[in-house]
Length: 277
Image (cartoon, rainbow, N blue to C red; front, side):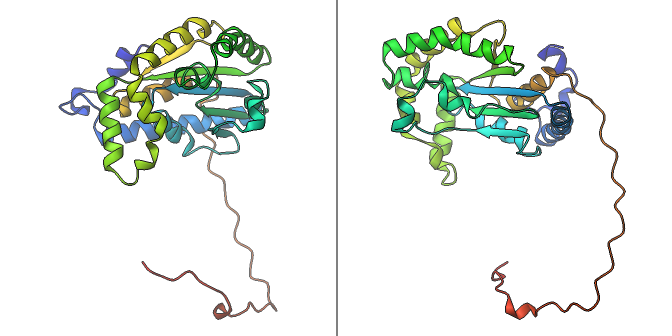
């Protein structure tokens, strides 16, 4: 089903004057999709499936937001998020993909990469952290690395979150104005504002080399956060066969009676957190 067909599931009254799904409608649909994610999780756990989902895109494009919505109701032992920092001096001497390999999924796991090995083709390339030869080698070996993952039985899904220049700038300004979000503005974010076209060129060349049949790139229009989250999660669910039945509620047994003859220590002997609220 296409995105246009999906939109017909909602009436005009479900959208505000700006064409954005109203908050209550968005939250209801997100909850429905999160229930489906739980079903997907259960199928992975029981059948021992493995999957990697890569989230890439420009800074402030909304990758973290959709990852949060995917993982907030799921079991972190099944749906794991990996967000690696700057490589250590030792890691810089390793085979480039080596530090990512240790985070690959075992049976019954879905790994969400909040940025991934594609750092080499994007940030590292544009910011000069990788040499031209290292970038060329990445372009040559990345498709083979991903084909190996797929041949081993891992489902690999890759998302690129696309955001316009004007919307990215609006989000940067919003982060700067909000003390709770200001930490999200890193020096790399500020640099990316200067190198918009360089990042565009790097992304286009990366797609040219790594948009392979076994693991194609899927572009998410991320200018509207609510729509991007729903579109991405719905598409992700479509990539897997999973059982759509919801487990029946458990019948909880009666609580056991208290054991007689045991006296608990007085509460005054324990240190309680002060009640400030």
